[in-house]
Image 1 (cartoon, rainbow, N blue to C red):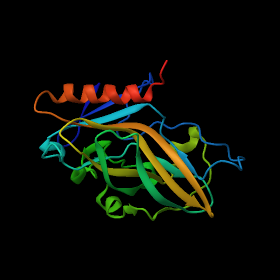
Image 2 (image 1 turned 45 degrees about the horizontal axis):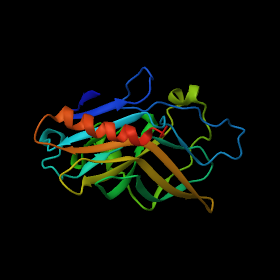
Image 3 (image 1 turned 60 degrees about the vertical axis):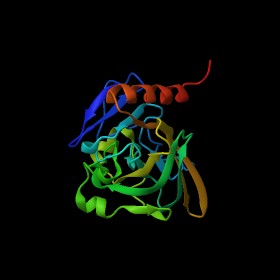
Length: 232
């Protein structure tokens, strides 16, 4: 478990796999469909599945969470529209939530694949890391639109292309004064008259505590990891 010190406060961000690099402000890129693929879904997920957990202990005023049930923002996944048509995000829900309430979600544009949102923080500080002008253009979900971009891009060329990429930031809080977590985010969207569902497996946790912040998040993160690990 690795403490991530943001500009204001501390969150816990860990990797579940043995991938060498710890990526806090950018997610790892996976192979995208080849340009000739006609059956690929419009949205390509650029985040490695079941690879990260982000947790915030509460209260942590320096991280924008002044009470145990403060609103918390989490934005881990990155999405790219590889189709030739815009897509509309119709709904977002939490994947297997436990004591965690979803209050809303927004779509944020990482223009030119830069200025990612904070993986987890108090909701009022979720824009930390983003340009103010980019955050101001965030779109509420449902109804947010991801424009068409430059078509499929190979993993090896994605960073060099600096394509516009998008993140979904969810606004959550714990329902009771106990740890809350979810295994990821489920996004439903439409494109060219068809409906699609995309599931991001990336754990988020909120750990109310009056004691050791790191210990509280370690226990919550273990619960998330257990949920992502198939039973024997």
